Length: 347
Image 1 (cartoon, rainbow, N blue to C red):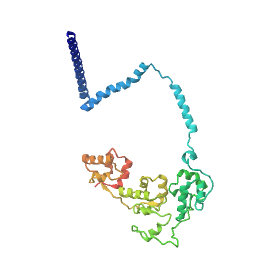
Image 2: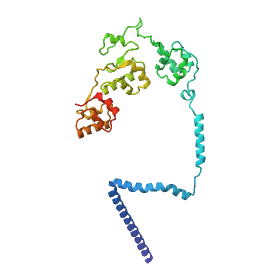
Image 3: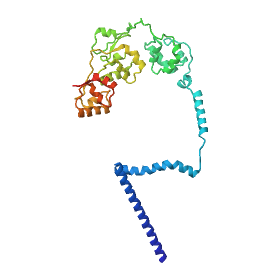
Image 4: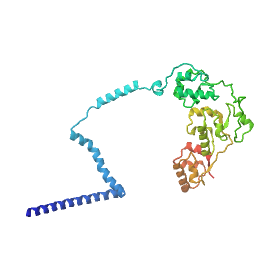
C-alpha cells in the first residue's frame, strides 16, 4: 500500500515537472513572438506564420545533409549523366525534326500533280490530297457560281490549311495574280435580278466605285457590309473593326486597323492601299479634366491602372493643361501619349 502511494506521488511530481517545463517553454515562445512582432511590426497572424515557417526552412535546408549522413549515400555520377543527356539532345536534333508530310499533314495523301480547281472533279481534287470535305466545299462553291481567278483564292475555302496550300501552290494551274491593267467589275447575269440593299448615305458615284476591285474606303464612314468587300475581310473581321472604331471614337490613322484582334500584318498590308482617313476628320475626344473614371477607362488605349493614376494626378496636381502634363505619369510612355493626343481635350 505504501509503495503504491509512493508511486502515485512520484507520478504527480513528474506530471508537475512536465507542466512546469511546458509552461517555461510557452513563456519563452511568447517572449520570442513578442520580440519578432515588435522588431518587424508583424500582426498576430503574421507572427504565428513566421514562427512556423522559420524552423521549417531550417529543416528543409539541412535535410539533404542529414539524409546523406544517415544513409551514407554519395552520388558521383554527374559526368556520366551529362554525357547521356548530351547524346539524347544530339539524337533529338538529328532525328526528331518535324516533317511536313508526316507531322503537319498526317492524314493527307498528297499526289503532286497539276490541277485546275475550276474544272477538276471532286475525285480529282481528292486525288491531289484535298480530302473529301475540302473537295466537297470547293464543288459546292463552284455550283453556287463561285470561281477561282488566282491561286490564293483557294485559301478562301473554309478550313483550307495554309500548310496544305504551300505544298500544292506550284501545282495549281492558275496565275499567281491578275494583270495590273485588269479591272474586274461585278456584273449581274441576265437571269439574275439586281438586289437593292439599304445602305448609309452614299451618292451614285460612290456606289459604282465600290463595285471595283481597286475602290478606296474611308475607314471612319463605311459600315461592316462595305468592309466585307475587302479581300480577306469577312463578317467577323468587319464587325471587329467597326466595334473597335466605336470604342476608339474613330480612327485617326489607318495604322490603327492593325490593332484589331486577329488582323495579321500580311492581311493589313493587303487591305491598307484601299483604306483612307479624311484629313479633316476629328475623332471623338474625351475631356480629361471633367470625364468620369468610367468614361476614361472605357477608352481602349487607357487601362484600369492608368485611369487610377490620371484621377489621382488630377486630385493631387490639378487640371491637365496639355499633353505635356501626361509625361509626369509613370504608367504612360511617349509612344502611348502620341497615340492618345487625338482623343483627348485639355480644357
